[in-house]
Image 1 (cartoon, helix red, strand yellow):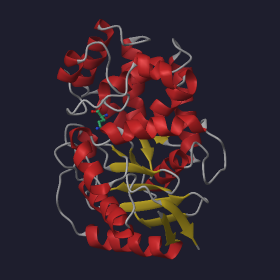
Image 2 (cartoon, rainbow, N blue to C red):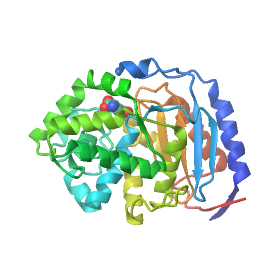
Image 3 (tube, rainbow, N blue to C red):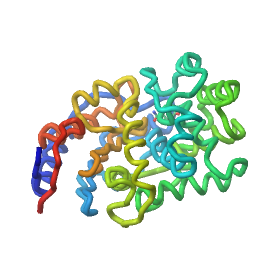
Length: 321
Ligand SMILES: NC(=O)CC[C@H](N)C(=O)O
């Protein structure tokens, strides 16, 4: 069906979502990474990027928070760009685990592949794949350049967060070496782990993540800079991965209730992609038990339901002035 929504309607609903959710007190900051436990839990920002490059920003949308697992989407895009869709499927996979993001059991159950670049195991594998293999500095430069192109501006490493994660990432160290045991690490395991830890420690804003989500929604063309970041055929591949596992063991409930593929990070950020229509990002530190920001989920769900939008609705959506 044809569906028309005006920009002023989107702005109004986004403001309502923000007002409605702002005072919500549910959830708790991630505490297994000491830096994240100390972030002000009242911070809350909401950003939308439309396909013509217009952005709507409400609240703390310029605050640099730890990108954490949202970076998995960015680096998955980078290896899709470098290797193509089939090789990523062969070398990592695109399956949901149905288990927590840092699950070791998931690797043991599926020892023939890490399952998806959007959980820790597959993300560490993805970092090992980033070209040029064997050169940590150049791999890091490629990761940062790719995020910069997706967001239209550069992320900034939060050094204190990087140190905090490096000092406490024992579970991820086990994952890296277990993957090595299954021949699913394609470079030095410690280097892959370090790149993964560093990319998780990048500071990013909700404004930047909405533009990155908008770039995916716009089939690889950044709506703000107009740069073609990746080829259009890769957009449905990354969006399918996000919808399958973006909220880990809560991904099914999320898709059922909100209808928009979205990826979370334990820093409190979420990036959500409605293909052809918009990119949405929200940021608020307190998390649910699966590690997904409580307020970000409520706000994005509010917008989707109020505007009657959803990836499964089959509507041809036009945004009017
Ligand atoms: N879900 C997340 O955001 C987890 C990212 C975090 N750096 C970790 O590996 O544990």
